[in-house]
Length: 459
Image (tube, rainbow, N blue to C red; front, side, top):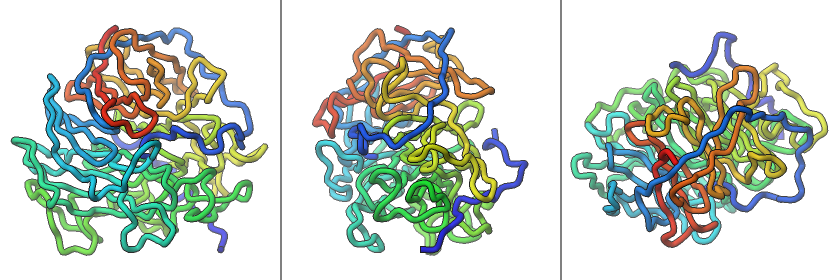
């Protein structure tokens, strides 16, 4: 295979932050106990950072709730990993909005596939456009031997009574997935009205093997995280769902479902970093392993949590055209080598995370990072301005990080001192007032009914 420079430095020096963050995260580690990482992670002092929270129930008896979005105050849509979207209201009333289990791969026990994310169009109250991502059985164009097909689809919802028909589905994007893990899962609209779609590196371990291309770095085999020409894996995509085809025409607000005769049911923002530069136009940033949950902060910053391999978990503040290092680096450490570069052969910088933590040996430690939100609510004043996130192994705590312009952000645990969310943290959400929701499960696998959503409060 021809050696590719891949993820090239294609941006001008004037590019800054965006104007103005697996079935479930990896709960069984790839090759745990045989780390290939080398180097010592930077210490993150948490001096002066002490926060505790409480939690009050919003909904219970859910099955592996991996995503929640607010329709309005007290009204939420919840994605259950096996394939149902529930409408949940404060007080516990629930109904099934969409049952997609016949379209989603069968999941049971530990599985990183399934119904993984959902997002409401910014004008949802007017147009009822709901966007969903899920793992489907292999579709046309998916190579033989691949695990499944990632599907991004749109459904038409009546926003007045929150009802929908599965027959309204319109496929927006498909991507072949070589292995069953590292599927990412979130989808989020940015303040620019564009949809941000993370994809993991394709699964397996180390970004290598079937479905993983060869890249510019000879220190380790692989991989998709450092390539922009062969597939969309290991990246954050940015697309315009209000446009179609090349040089697209807009889909008018109010046209839920928006069927079109154009060859591509989405547009590419012209300022995406690889447009006219030789890579796949949908790419916004790259160098990711398994980005599990992303969010935009009040300042417009894009926060992306990336699940690590065997040693380190990380959170990145993502910029347009940024390369976040995988599989050359895992967080701030070299992966699979004693020494490794900090730039590509083209001079493109491998950008460091803002947060990292190890799997053991530290006050802040865990197994698989779960991205959260920069807090701007009022119910828990001690969280003001902090980035609130967690780890799949919740153990009755969350994490908080405080901004630091000089390096890694100071990070500390935030014990949940009242209320009793499940033992395993799956995801975060946010209500219209900026208050944070946590999705949890009592099971390490796809549980039957032990899932719940809680709202964070003061302890």
